[in-house]
Length: 168
Image: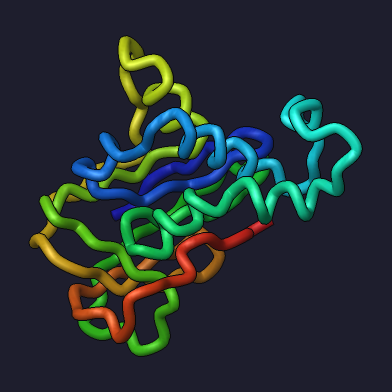
């Protein structure tokens, strides 16, 4: 399936099962804002005066990283991207470092900024990049940058994953 991805400055692409949206509380959304600010150029730096941003970012994003490492969400960190992309089912993925658990089989793809905004303000309607209905379970995710993403249903080899990728 092909889709157009449009991300703002300090943004990203998020894959998540819709059932996990309710777990993203205000604290996790704040951490996600910090995660998106790779270089400390947003107003968030004012919350941490006289601190090195790399140290702040590592420390203050611990819970959102753990959320992703459990296979609940994948985040590709992007900056001002507009491109045609594709997601494809693969018969076998052998070299995957990203794993996604879909307990309901409802894969939601959304920009990180849209996710944060719509969960912070529930009266807003979320503009989704795309949705897929898949079989419930675990999925290996492999990508070439963010242009081509492949998925394959299979059991993960271990329990923590590297589900955050900087694609700048």
